[in-house]
Image: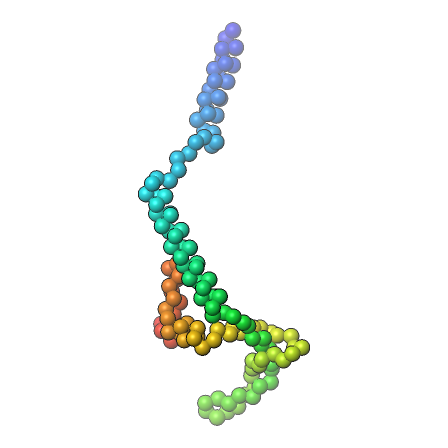
Length: 131
């Protein structure tokens, strides 16, 4: 009898331990303030995404196929010449090395003059950055 009582007590203890440490229980969701803050953040992200999609759709319309060639002669500011590589537009049938984005004059002016701020990142013209 003593052994049976000990077994029942051990099983009850194990069951109690299992119930209190099980992860499948109900968990509290975000508070109303947290939910509203997340809702506001999602709305901001959607607005930024729409703006970025509009710029990408309007500005980045085509890519120009480019090939990098060796053996170009270049002249330095002191008058000396040296051999370097150069970029040229790929002709029909050539295999491009890379593509340059054609953004058009209007978009280039916007990109060159505007500071774009997206999700905490700031894109500035290289001439305005500190070295």
